Each structure stands twice: as C-alpha cells, then as structure tokens.
Image (cartoon, rainbow, N blue to C red; front, top):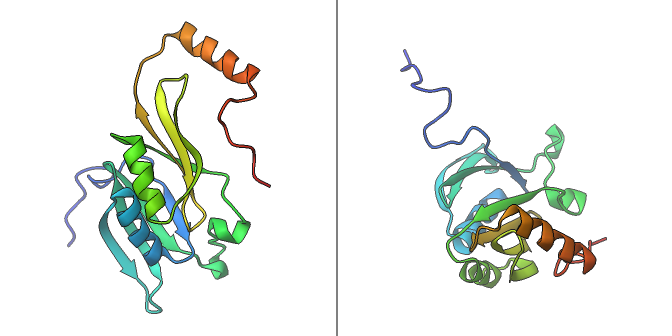
Length: 166
C-alpha cells in the first residue's frame, strides 16, 4: 500500500508551477541547464522517446516540461508562431545571466536596463519559442516614484520597450 501524502503538493513544487510544452523537450532541458543554470530534477520518456513529463528547477522554482503532442492538442509556441505568455525569473545578476543565456542560443529581445519599478530588467526568447524576462531588484521606489516613472515612460512611448513583433 502506498504511503499517504504528507501535503496537498510535493515538497519541491509551488502551488502554481508552469508546464512548458516544447518541440524537442529533451533539447529544451539541455538548453535551460546551459543557459539558465537550471537543475534537472527528473524526466520520464514514453516508449517513443518523447518526454511525457520532466521537471527542472531555476532559481529555486520548479518548471515542468513535456514534448509537443499534436494528437492531444498539446502545441508548443513554435506551432503558433510565438507565445503570449512570458516566464519571469528574478536572478542575482541579470547582466551575467542574460549574457550566459545569449551565449547558449537565446535571443535577447530587450537588453538589460534599469527600470522605474526598481528592477534591472531584460527579455529574451529561447530557441523553443518561449518568452522569458529576467530581473535583479535594485531599488524600492515609493508609490509616487512609481507613478512618476510610469508617466515619464508613457510620455516617451514606453522607453526601451521593444516594438511589438508581427
């Protein structure tokens, strides 16, 4: 008889965890290990070798992955031509983190820059079509500073924000 669970969720999971569908999940795991310093926590491949479930950890947060399976409607962002969802990760040094990820094959879509909300922030797309943002928190703005920064950014046309891709 199985041992009863000690919690409503496994110890290494957050209550909400992303589950990425990838065209080439095994290659994606390898990329995330190289680019983001991810730690692979496990993978389960089906008889055809495709990943049925895998888990990595980035900066202490778990992310699950699975291979695309069009027969079950499981489509990754490359099937759609992009992703409307962005994964956001706080890291100790955003500049170093983004440089490593770019060297590993990620595409920077917004270079690291200090932002009015208190973060040094950057965005990139991985080779599997997923969009990521990374930040290092550098200061705590007051509500008035946040409002002033947002207004200044709006007056400048969103500052350094990249133009929307077609």
